[in-house]
View 1: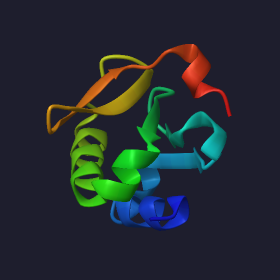
View 2: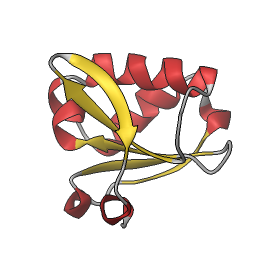
View 3: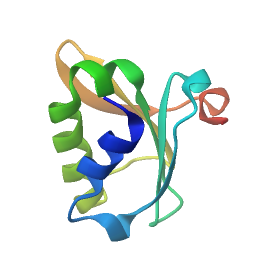
View 4: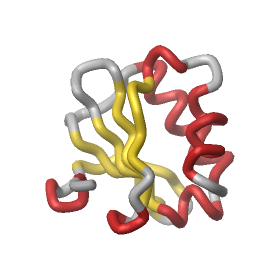
Length: 94
């Protein structure tokens, strides 16, 4: 799935909470910039390609609730469960 299609589906109904995205493949995923509290989320390419429905559901639920423990997060597959971890700064560069 392309980054633009992924973001379009994700943002449906929560457009005001997503400020922008960076679809630079060199970082290994899509950076999503949220309008609240300077949060940035890295979504790895493999989640967008192979688990896009689960990924969109997880992201939307957490974005709506503002449930992030750090400003820079990465979404990961941990044994079949999608979890948010702190993201190293070098993974956040576009």
